[in-house]
Image (cartoon, rainbow, N blue to C red; front, side, top):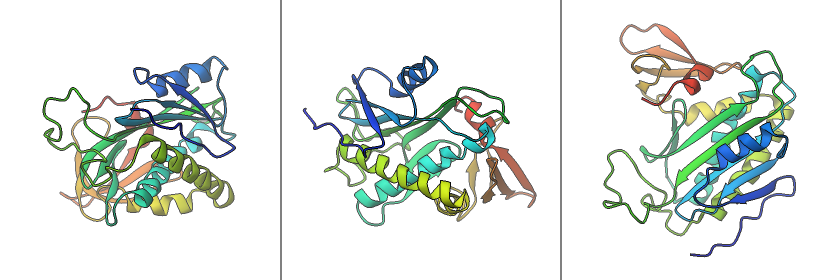
Length: 248
């Protein structure tokens, strides 16, 4: 199936890769080698998924640069909210699982050139993976427990290029908002779309089993505040630690 290439805003330069390649890995290698830089967006030609990675070169320390992670999710949620049918619920299951109508539909990723919190990274990479439809060789499409796709949730007329274009435009808008007004505006939108904000949910802690509680907020240095359902105490969960931990 042939699809037109996505048309990105002028500030973003697209770099397509074959469907068998992983844009996040390509972007990380290219950034580390100095072959790719700020506003380069690596994207996959896959027709069954959206898979992309955006490179940024921040001018703030890693602890603050990590704010780009919830910003990227907010941009993606805005994109899907505009493109999907009305009342489609787009949420994030902490720390990095994208949910559409409560079904797992994708992942967000983050990497940086340093792990020193007070050092300014030379580069960071934000990755987005989103299932558009089941793979052609899937013996039971739509039957995987807890999983879904854009097609299954009513977005059957959408393709990877439409979503990529919309994401890139919303990402630039949110970066401008962040530069002008700081993290506050992003925080308000992000928290409202985080699983556990409206009612208690199982939230990954990054070590050990999940914690059941209600999300209260997210600090500027990416510490999630969660009120435990069992005893009412407030726990602080680090985004950095959660992203380093293997999936459970």
